[in-house]
Length: 235
Image (tube, rainbow, N blue to C red; front, side, top):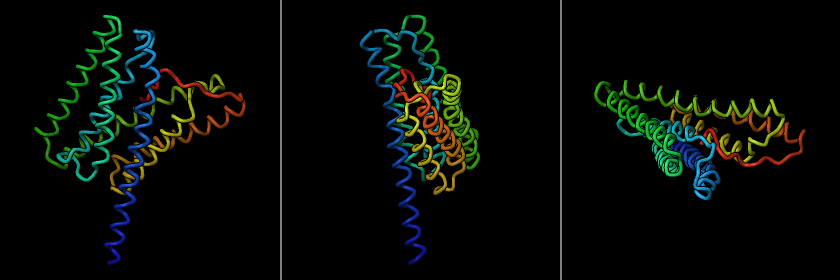
């Protein structure tokens, strides 16, 4: 009875961590809404970049594929968060392309095409050339590289905060949501005994803590309230 009870408790904590990660990720997914409301209102993408959403789309697709049963079983909550994330990025990119100038529109369509080709190649190699264990390792390493790249993007904002001694472009709510999401999925990966989950999300947790520490330090120095950035690099 004791092992069964422990197993049930273990499963409960694992599920709770995964659900929490999904909730905090949703906060990040909706964070660019002010940007796109402005784009729609002004009928122009102005000087905004669509590249963060290209990167985010590729990341979501690779991580979604890793969580598919043909690659890795038992991590359905990774699949749900990345499926929602992919939908959000596609909606954002559709709006961006609609209001972009012709040259930018064509360039963004080319990037989306490249993402589709890369993802199709990953799927083809995974299913056509690799056995189950090899497939898991192959896609797992790709997902780690993709996640670490995503979590590394706030380093540019951290550098800007230190340089300007201002937290204007590093809102507390986004930094806090990033930290909680990373922590939740790091715990989820530990419960699932999956280093491809807990290693990159552990790095994200550390970077989130760094952002929160910098926010506390520099907001006390400047006494300012941060403004929501128009483009979030880790959208």
